[in-house]
Length: 83
Image (cartoon, rainbow, N blue to C red; front, side, top):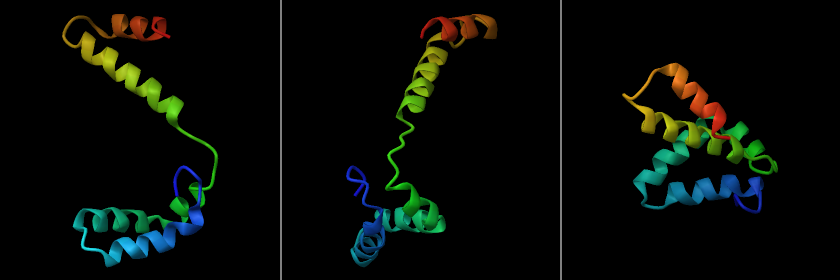
């Protein structure tokens, strides 16, 4: 459903999960249901936030490495120069 961008299958998948005995997935489905229209409309789109997530991951890793070693100015320079 996700890799093939089949948003039209979301309702049937949510119904199948609700019928099964999987309490953790029930909670996930309730979360999806709170903003059902946005989830269903977003599934068929070809856009991805993967590049942004990669940059955020890189910045967090640098921040963890620099923790307690220097101030914000050095962290900022290291982030800008690590591209």
